[in-house]
Length: 244
Image 1: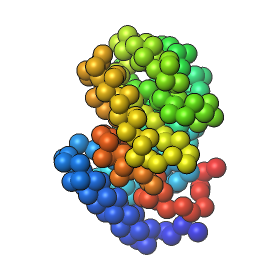
Image 2: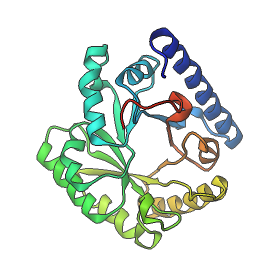
Image 3: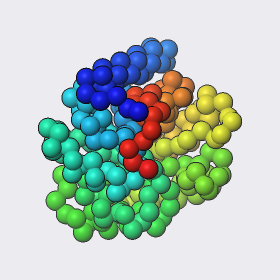
């Protein structure tokens, strides 16, 4: 079972320190400033109380996979003394088009845009919502192995999809996102992703961000230019989840 209260807080403090140290070492190896890497704490299946602890420790970027779970936590955080509007919410899981209106009501960024239908849905949802201070930030997820079950646009369709996002003023194209293929050396996978990202930047210079790297491979991702790492288990452990 997950510890509660001070014990859980101390556990998260230690894990956060270890993750930040890993990021710093990887940046040092790559000759980068650690401030150039945003830690997105992936809190899927974890309680809102964990989000509150992270927020008090200065982690303001929170990643969720499911819209319903994200909205439940946002509703609960106020009772825990945390303003959910002070956090930047990142949708990191595969997203259904029919969730677009809900997602744009709270999300700072979507990391998993992988098809033209979702471009239209998100842009139209931003228009319908109104009142946003800035466009919705978008990372185009590219498939490095062609496996449709894992999400991502095939590389042959990447340029067209990137152009479609860039053409929508409601969306801000930040760059690419990818997950290494199963069984492939992350160093090789992230090197290939970096090449694809460079190609995108050649046509869209403002698309200078790269969402890559999770708990097991964030070090390799940072060395290959990741600006956003999506870290869950290394921060919050592999315990019995509160949400399924």
